[in-house]
Length: 217
Image 1: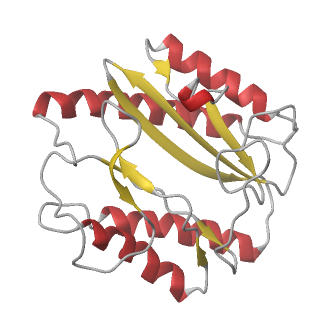
Image 2: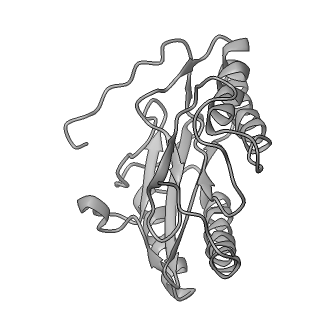
């Protein structure tokens, strides 16, 4: 069941969303060649705690860090480490915060320095897919419209749509109903109502949509 949030709930969700967005943008400024992904993790945790919130990812289903730090071919859920970022890397970070009982979840991808035109287009089209998906999020539309918005834009460029990971509802828990895949048929699935809150997470690949899970998860 999709949980509709009250006006008071939405105010709290907006507050935690703004907080974690500020952390994300501060981290973006830190993403430079020579910085380790663990340094970014530690900085994020400090900023979240200093704001009076808790890093939601830390301990979530046993996850041992405050952010996910994925470099290059790693799509999502990479572990922070002593890896030193370098020119030409594509770095994606995903993070969350819990404040006054509600969760904010955000992610972004940062190219370091000069990257190929092919990769730059992939990053751009993924961001455009997110914008198109958000445009579908208003009362009367359906959850299938969100995935369709991502799918039709990605397929124009021949990109593979990652199917093993999805967006989701969010509120008092990081993952709530519904699952929101990055593909779908317009006019299908649950009707969107006022008070619903979603985390939309487009993930596209050059070519194949296939993914592989490493031994560490």
